[in-house]
Length: 178
Image (cartoon, rainbow, N blue to C red; front, side, top):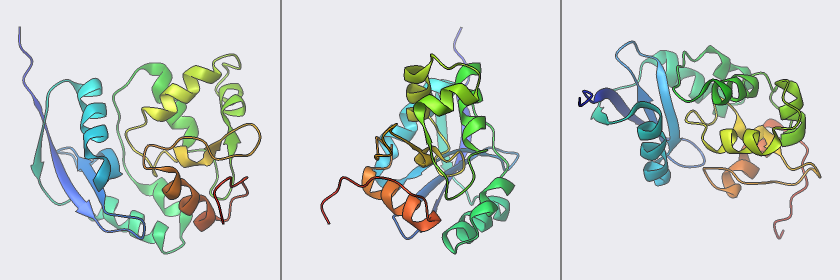
């Protein structure tokens, strides 16, 4: 039996670190957010979570666009207003939910994140779930860093992770050349 593809709406929003691709559903709820130059990554994540997906052009509602614009203007908590819904496993969703509780300007290690969700030995699984996060920025996976305070992987590139953490005033060890 073949499943009917799910239709989502795709919009683009300019940001100081590159255009964002916003994917919403018919209810105006955010399903995915990624950087324009990471379209293949985003469509792969959508396919893994929902099966076949059809993206049609459509404006994201102001309830999504506005808080993102306010975040980049310095109102960091505005992202908490965005309605969102994800697929993924129960474990992944627990990680993504926990990400939303890391305050702007703060960071956690993968180990601390695993402990926070009650799975202290699941450090690698937390890292994998972090990497499969379909709603970057809103579920702020950029706030998870290495145990030694260093920047580690980010689906939008380390240069963007660095920018976002600096924008929020977070402390981290920057191994990049000055």
